[in-house]
Length: 373
Image (cartoon, rainbow, N blue to C red; front, side, top):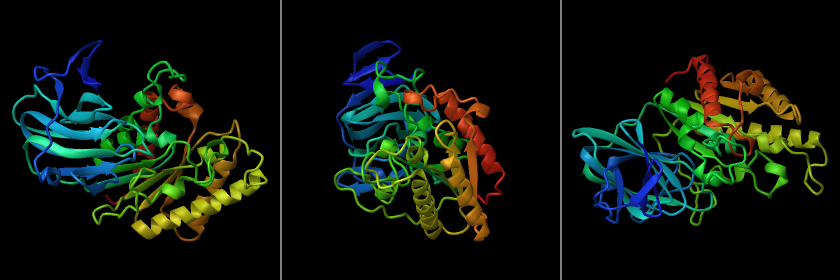
């Protein structure tokens, strides 16, 4: 049974008990790991090293380590985010806003194990910190040769994907119902045994945020390590990070609402032209960063209830890339009706079932791209 830790208690099923040394599945203690602990942990996602741990904000960031024995401690300093803990691939706990603590998983079978800590939630303005593992920690896992980068908005972040009702205000709100670890990106990557990054920010668009809010856009923050959190800087691409696939899901926020008075586009056509130009520039950036061999997939859902501008723009971009000799750019249309999406996540977002469907569609699309893994 999975354990949920919140405010110093362990919750299993419907009951709660104090988080003491006697807890069997998982518990909280206040120890900090020995020096060098982080050197035995593999990291996937954008992080900033500093002080005693690694800081991060992007959803889905995860850490993996190996250990021997019946227990392992995970050192955290984060009063904002929620996490998933997996041991040997199976979910053993959900950790809710742990604060500064060492979270212990206990009662495991003896022998060698792999543990993964994954960030479920978004926190663009607040960084969490991971300090490493405590226990009989072994050499870090070997990095996977397959790598995928997912870029997008709330769909990519897994916004509200654990909810079974569109109004989740009475069932924990957005954060308690969001789990990037079971978003379509994470599901696709794990199914292909690939390491991955989820670089997503709900409400952000390529040139226009949801309902025209703010003067920034997704591109403003894409190159940062900690998004808008204090101390954020430019992310330095590690030499080992060279994804064979980049999946982009931007444009819903640009086009899902009509233009408001005072926005910088006088007409929808002007917005569409700006979107296409910015998207082309963004793909150029990715091409410069990762080279010509990386496959870039432009995804988009059905917005026909509002406009066909997003579909038209994506198709035009792919056509122009092909005409210019960039054949490794493709489009994937998520047809809500044909796929049977129920959009029962918070605020009409994809549900957990929907993310499984989206992952299957994306996996099928990737299978037809003749990827060189």
